[in-house]
Image (cartoon, rainbow, N blue to C red; front, side):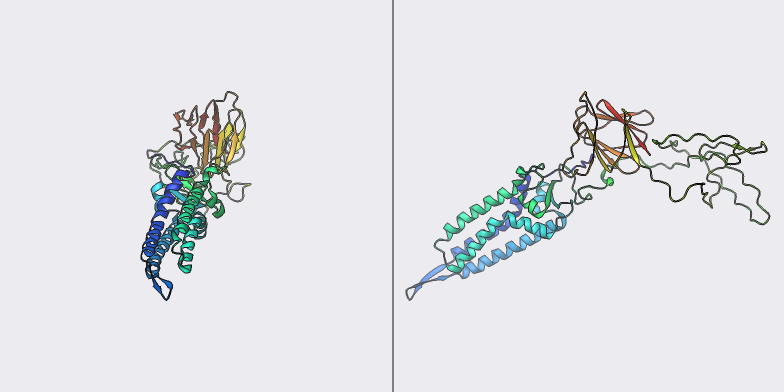
Length: 418
């Protein structure tokens, strides 16, 4: 199944739906509890004074306030650790911090405080009504405050519609430094390595791994020299049984091929190609197998330290070549989406306008590149070293090995190592 590796900001409608689902239970319990409490208030006259019995308001109001705080605490803790709430789960969105991980309790509390500021003001007004016994005017005080608080909460939740950065943040997100992503339309950063995401989230529907012998496994084993009298006899190499394996192909490289060594330079064998050399006496010496001496590692002259790590590069059809960063966007004038601010932008000149503005996304993993066609107009394709050409499915990452060519629009680049 194809996996969308992109990050998609949550739309204002989904944000509002999730907020309504999350806030509605707590607000409903609070309103019902206070309504029952206010309805149970009685008043009597005593000595010319009006005495209010508010025991029912204190009882039911306390119960409602306690249940609401307990519910909000559970929701806050769940969102702080996982970015999930009942509303987020139902609407398919997740809240995260600015790096794409769980937002944390402080950020979630600040977002909720800003969003529910109007509702909290109404609760404070209800407490003042009880303290100062403004029961006759309670409806005229609390009714408008509840309406204003609800309108403010809706305005804050959908404020990402006015965000110039692709609707990524609302007012509460900007204050708490949080983000909200649509995990149905894109990737969930919390469970997939944050904003950047590791390479392992590319789809792994690859062919099964097959055992492959050494590149020179079929070469003739070299004869061991006669041991010295004082030295123990050298162990004889074990025979390797032939097996049905995939043919070995040398990795592609941008480095030029090393020139062949001149003949007659002593007894130094050429291990890379299995050639035999000729000694000073004219006798032919059979080639030495690289796996014959399994107990020791031969140190090559002039080398010290570990071998350099291969670096992936691409060479465009106009002769330019580039070293690839981890994430690369290729196109006529590529622009990153949400979460791709740190991607390498590779603009390719295309007078015929066959290339889309952002045509390809490349994600390197050392051994090769995951190439994704970004819903381009003219499509893309990959040609493997054996000449097999395969069109890319838009939005589906395809693994490309070094030595392959990638065609996008009327342009092509070659993937190799250096």
